[in-house]
Image (tube, rainbow, N blue to C red):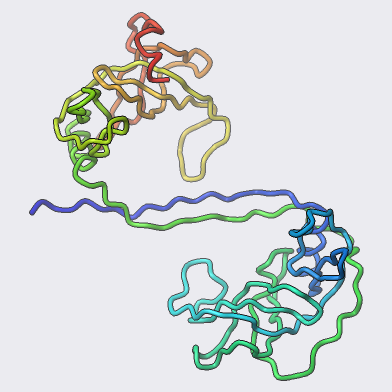
Length: 313
């Protein structure tokens, strides 16, 4: 049997967000070892706090301190902690209703094993030794058999408020391309571009997924396309990506290769970014030892007529 292609892939994006007055006070409070909730018009205290009542949609601003002790309302055991999770050893994910709150806060519970966790058990916050104004300022919860802690009655006013956070999002997975894309990848290693033709509509798709996205029928007839093509649409990138050694600004474009009925993505080089245009004729440039085109450059041909690529916009 042929070797099954697979490779580890990581999708990562550090999302930066600003904070409104409620979330700003909540996270600043965690930095100062204070847990704040927000009170609704009917007297409920929501922790973590939200800016609008989830029932009435009324704007909420009445901040109130709750205790760092509470009760587990439900839980699940995590046998294999992953990268970036609160604890490196097995732990329980728990919903904790803090004393003085009416809703549950999701966090980790440090416990020796699942037999040590139960609904209704009492817990308390374990604060991180270094705090910056983030949910990770609560290192985790830990079992607690003492009396409920008494809040100091903090009103949510702080100096040096936290006004924004960076929330890293990351997905690690193993990707296997399947029959059609494996053939596409193998052809690229030979500096060729291969798609598949639909037996019904006769369109050629590059890269192929093994089925026609229009007709829904399987594709198997392989067709070599390109190597030249036409820029259909493009964007100018002004923000430098992490781990990408390309100076900004640069142009990323949809390129309709000759003989293909679907445009693929590619970077445009060999021309000032502000001279790239729709209809520009381009060809691939391969780096030494590269398994795919490094970028596409102008061929010097006249621009393609709009009518020849308008269906691929």
